[in-house]
Image (cartoon, rainbow, N blue to C red; front, side, top):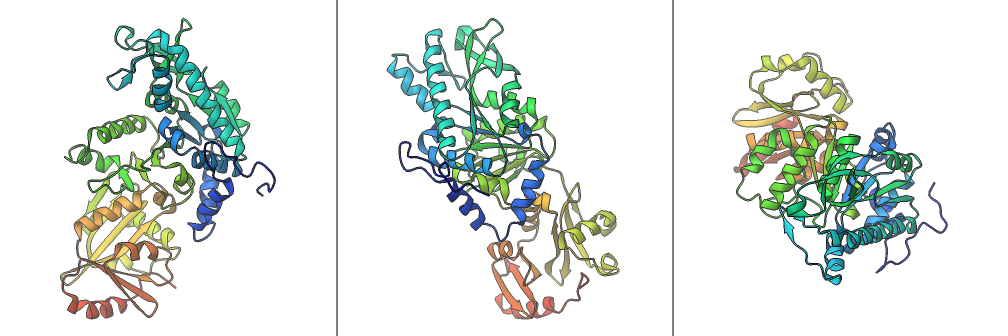
Length: 451
C-alpha cells in the first residue's frame, strides 16, 4: 500500500515537481492489467538489490527534468527496488568553473582537469548529488548520497588531461549497504588514486567500471531525447547487437555521437550475461521501460543470432512446438508440422521467438508468430518481426479477435477485416480487388491450435 501522508508528493524545487503518485497512475494506465508489472517485479525481486539496475543520469537531465527524474526513482522505492544511480554534472561544472575563472577545455572527449579545478568539481558534484537525493526524498523515496569513495582510479595522462582518472577498481561496501537497506545509492563521478589524490572521472567510464563489477540485470541511460533516433529522427525501439551492430555502424546516417554511444554500449554488454541489456529512455518514461513489454525508448541487447530456415527438415520441431504452445497457451493440433506447407522460418537461436510462414499461391502467409514473455522483454519478438517484414513486404495473417497481441497487429498492419472470431490482417497488398477473397480463404483455414 502506498502511504497517503506527507512524503507522497514532491515539494517544489525550481518549478512544480511531479507527485510520485502520478508516475504510478501513468504506468498503470499504459497496461491492460497488472500481469506485466507482476511479472517484472517477480523477476527483479529474485536479484540482489545492488544487482537490479545501474542508471546513468546526465547533468543536463538533472537541470531540465529533475521533477520527473526524482518521481520516477521514488516510484521504484514504492515497489521495493533500489537502483544504483550514477550522475554527471557537465552543465553545472561548466558554470561553476567559469565562475571560478577556470577555462573549460576538452581533449579526446574528456574534460581537462587542472589541480585547481578539483575543489570546484568536488563541491559542485557533491552539491548536485545532494540535490538529487533530497528531491527523491521529497517524493517519498529513500536515497543515500555517495559523492565519493567508490571509484579507485589511475591518472590517464596527467600531462595532457590533468587530474582525470580511469577507474580500475570499485569499492562496493557503501553501495551494497545502501541498496540492501532499500535506499537508492546516488553516486557522483569522483575517484581517488592510490596516493590519495581526488580525480575527475568520465561518467561513461564510471558506469562501465560499476557495471563490470556488479553485473546488473538492467543498465539504463536517461537522456533528453529518451531514445536513439533513426535516419528520420524517430526512436529506434530495439537494437539486437548480434544482428544489427555491423549494419548500424556501416550506415551513413549514424552520426559520430550515436556511433560513440553504440560502441560504448557494446563494450558495456560484451562481458555481461546474455540477459543483460541497456535501455535508453527519459526520466518520465523510466517505469514504463522497466515494467512493460513494449517499453519506452531504445532497448539494446547483446541479442541472439537469427536463424533463417528455408527447409522444413532444418526446423527443430521439438523446440518449436513448446515455443508455440507456451506462447499461445494452447496445444498444437495433432500433425501440425506434417501438414504445414512450409515456406520459411525466422527463429532466434534459443527458440524463444519465431515467425513461421507458408504460401497461399503467390502470397506469403504468417502461420505462426510466437514469442515467449521474457523474450518480449528482451526485444527478441521485435527483432524477429523486423526480419519477417524485410523478407515479406506483402504479407497476410490472422488472429483470434480476443488475442491481446492484436493491438500490435493493428499498429503494424495496412488493413484488417473482422470475420467471425478471426481478424485477418495484411501488409503491402497492392491489388485491393483480391483482398475479399483472401480474407475469406484465410478465415476458412483449418484450426492449428486445439480449443
